Every structure is written in structure tokens, then in C-alpha cells.
Image (cartoon, rainbow, N blue to C red):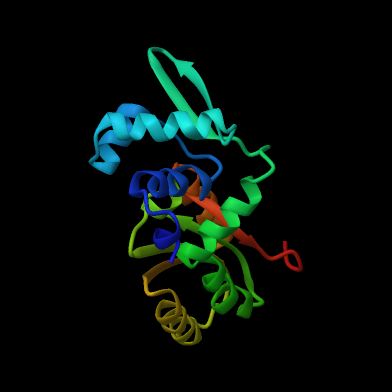
Length: 179
């Protein structure tokens, strides 16, 4: 539905790339390779977002690196819309919140760095998770969001070892009752 509202595919890709994960950063040539589009089309949209204050940039060597302006008044709203578009809100609602023993949930892989993908990779941290019930919840969420979900369950010690090395993981949920 969002692709109907935002018909410019480059603009939508940039929104996903920068506003789904606030840690996401990139430069023009890197985006060209990711999007498989001309640098000119990407440059025009980057300039529009930067002029509107939605993106910030800085130089690293000879590269101009872009990132989302998380202090922009619309950042949280754009992030929320994109999470709904991707289906992250439904995943949290239908999978994560139903497990009291679950401590944290992360998105990893391409989606974590803002590349739209039909496969969502989850890393769930917790103990004694009912795998049968989890698989039922995953199936239900997949139907709702029309995407495939793959998951990995880790204990807290495994979390530190596994996710410390990954640059493509970001926390989408933390159990406030069981920190």
C-alpha cells in the first residue's frame, strides 16, 4: 500500500534504507549498488531528503555519508509507518508479546539495514520458549504481513556472542517486565 502512496521507487527504497533502522548509514555509490539504479536518480532524492532536514550527511574520506535525522519531528512517524508497511508491528503483536519468557527480539539481515525483503529474519532471546506455539504464531504473522519469517532462538549468553559481531541487528522489542 505504501508503494501506491509513494510511487517513486527510489524514494521508497531510501525511506526504508534510512528510516527503518536509525543506525543505517550509506553513501551514493553504495546505494547505487544496493538499489541497482542510476546515481542521478538516487542523488536527486538524497538531496530532497537532505534539503527537507530528514537526512544528515558528513564526509568520511572522500565519501559523503548519509543517515536519518532522528531529531526531525517526523522521524518517529515515518519509522512507525515503515514498520507497519514491512509488518514489524504485526510480528511484535502476534509473535513477541505472547511469550512471557522472551527477553528481547531483534531484526537481522537485509531488512535490518533497510533493504526491503520478502524474508524477515528474527533473533529471539529467551529461555524455555515453546517452539510449537512460536511456529504457530509465526505462521499467523506471515499470513498477515505476506512475508516469510525465519527465526533463531538464543540464550542471553549466546546473544552477547552472536549479536556483538553483527552490524545488521537492531532491537525491536525488549520485555520491560523481565529485563
